[in-house]
Image (tube, rainbow, N blue to C red; front, side, top):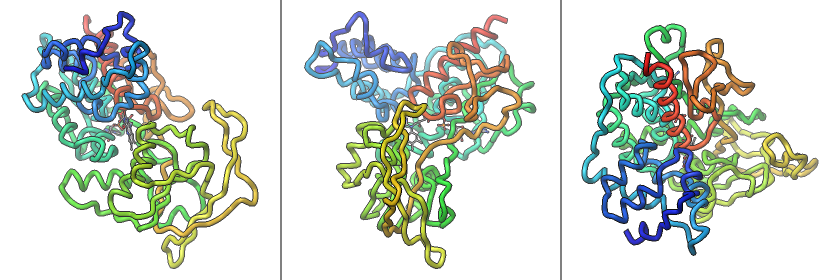
Length: 416
Ligand code: FAD
């Protein structure tokens, strides 16, 4: 409450502009200061049903908190205040939202990640019947299968999903939707939230060796074990080289270190300042003695008797500015060197896995094209959001997309 009372309640509320879900931060913080914790969590959930999850893993220093504090000596700890009210609710019981009378319309949601589940929750609140089809054994998408347990407590995710189910969303697990054509006619509208969790390959010799692992596979196999209270069945060696500069690379490296690998290094082909990973996560690496070596790119792996022995790396330097606005890394001729390693983890990017490109328009990368205001695709009754649309952003962005799509669907079919 002391922290909450530091909030100045700015009329222009720059913090809200910094939040993709447009969480009413000023209001929920005022409610905390007034000791109205139930009201505060409700305010957050009106725009973000994954209030607890996001309170653990939102990059607040690069979003809402970055925008706060021009008139204060330091920003208000918005993330910690949100975590406090989310934990308050987990301890004292979730309270259901009132739903509108049934609209007798059925929505099909494909993918039970944060985007799909957020759309489901807000649609249920509006009175729609919602069926969610999830390819995996557990719902939650990357919350369940990607983000490590040291950053996001699995029970927080489980409880928030359980709340959405209690509200009325029906989740069918082990139910991949491969052919949209067979699906469309059963529903009044469809939301696609299938993410983009395919792996970009390094495409270099030796990548096929067993000890060269895709980060997505590594993180997923670890998390499945965590969920089953087992030790991960994927064992890395003592010397691990991770290639990449995003959150996936950082998570893979920190998990490797926390799981017992002694010497873990991250190699990135641009500068550390160009790394897309959250700044806090980069700092966390340093606390674990994980070295991040910039301007390095792997060119081949060498094995002996089909077992990984070493990796050859070439140094790079910044070249021309590319489409991403960053300087393209250029290999420096003759700078190759090799290092002995036991395991390598490739984490150089995510790929969309959406296949029904004959039904909705996609861009060159395979990302689904949508109208930004409504999240509607090129098909009149199909909406989409989350990583399948943006190629990989944040949980709060996926949640915001789901919420916006629910409004878009309601605007389209709510009155007919
Ligand atoms: P996903 O979470 O990928 O969910 C998609 C779901 O659709 C999955 O459950 C999948 O099984 C299912 N699916 C796919 N195809 C089908 C099909 N054909 N039929 C049925 N179901 C299907 N963001 C943050 O804000 N903070 C972080 O700290 C953070 N860390 C991250 C760490 C890692 C390792 C990764 C990879 C991402 C991280 N992100 C983080 C990004 C964030 O997790 C994603 O942006 C977010 O999960 C996207 O949500 P989504 O619902 O669009 O997709």
